[in-house]
Every structure is written in C-alpha cells, then in structure tokens.
Image (cartoon, rainbow, N blue to C red; front, side, top):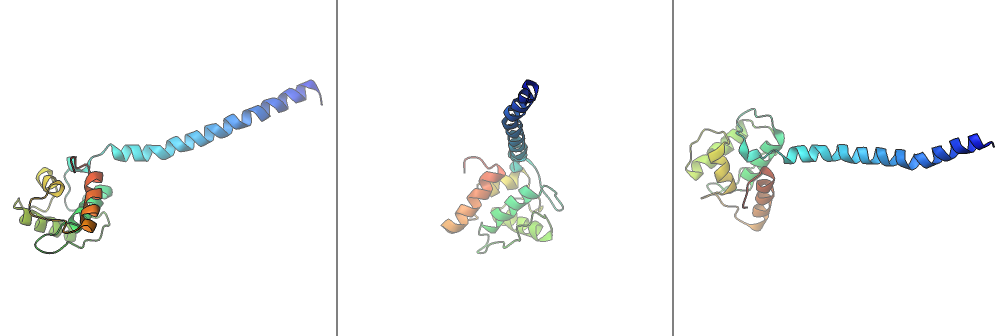
Length: 143
C-alpha cells in the first residue's frame, strides 16, 4: 500500500462516525419537530363546531365529555376526532346542563366549563384521571 492509499483509507475510516452521527441527529431532530409543533397549539384558544378538522383537539373534547357526568350519565362518544352530530349533541347536552348557550360549538365559554365544570362531575377517580389528562393536553390551565 502506498502512502497515498493509506491516507485515503484513514480519512474514510475517520469520517464514518461523523456521517453516522449526522444521520442519527438529523433523524432525532425531525422526530422532535411534530411534537413541538403540536404542543404550540392550545385547543382551548380555538372554537370547534360540526365538521371541525383539527382532530387532536376534537379527541380531547370527546374524551372530556365522555368523562364528565351530565344529568346522571356519561356521553359515551367514539373518540375518533370527528366533530359530527353525536359530538354536537353531547356538547349541547353539556351546555344545557352547565346553564350556558346551547349552540353545539365549543368556544371560549364552553371551554371554560369543560376545563372547570360547575355542575358536571367526574364521579370517580377513574373518570377524573381520564378527564384531567385530556384537559391538560387541551391547554386547560390550573387543572
């Protein structure tokens, strides 16, 4: 082997760890970006109504409604992120029970009651824990 061949080989061997580290770090940064982007959006700063498209926030609404007892029963919604007629009806029942306007949309007043209900209750620790996780994820503060 000549001196020139040895230099080429040692350069290649020394650069492999750098190339691997670059790919690993770039993959790590790309995986972190969606989590940071979604964490920047507080659901309770937005209004949701029939056909709303931000599925994550709608899932939080559905989970919160499923774990708050309204008029002696829970909502039993499918947590699918689709704000359809069943979710609208559950929101209207919740709004009626809480004594606020029954428009079926989740805006500032309804978010306030979803985050700090006056009459609806979580009934037990199981429902409270599930409601609490969804409330915190949706951006409810002081819960």
